[in-house]
Image 1 (tube, rainbow, N blue to C red):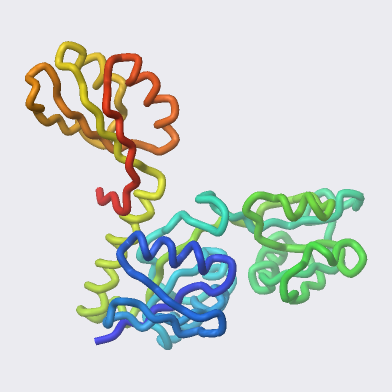
Image 2: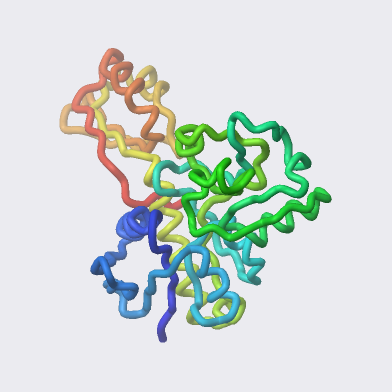
Length: 289
């Protein structure tokens, strides 16, 4: 059997392929190809705009895919969420869907946009958002680059932002956040009801979440004098107790621990000062809880 898998083409493509590589899957594609090749004969991947993936899954055209919670909300597609995968093109932070206006405009909140013109890729989401606040505005679809349209062409925009740098560069300010969004691994209800596809999807979930966990963690090995073992191990944060192994010299043991990568730069000097030697930091591909 084959699992038809939609992968996001565009800004998330490289980060998605990198995540799958850590999970154990190698994708290859040419610059013009929408049909990547993967070293798993049970997966048939296809590159699609993330905006399209929820709809194709909801209609049963593809079995599963990775897309943003924002596009699931915008399309209103009926899909089953398998898991959240917190990665994006720049950081592991969620993106925000925001209403933004020019810094010099008088608009301070969404109710000020009554009768105004708004450009966005999120037309349906924006319409529902405004209707929920009793605001009637002209919402028009934009093929991206919304920032350059304010204020000459439109009064406001609804866009996604990860760092806010593009908005600031175009002299724009946020007046409200509509929602926050992360990448989701989702599937169709028929695919989930199929025993073989469900097992394949569950296996992918384990591997992808393991790779996602590992992206923020490292392993650390060291040699520890027995006389100072309690003091040194007391410095170590860990998923579980550190792994301790005897060495040929009975006065020393080897210790190994998994920890957050951001903790290492402060921890290693302290471990060295406490008497640990032979410290080795190494990357991880998967961490399965």
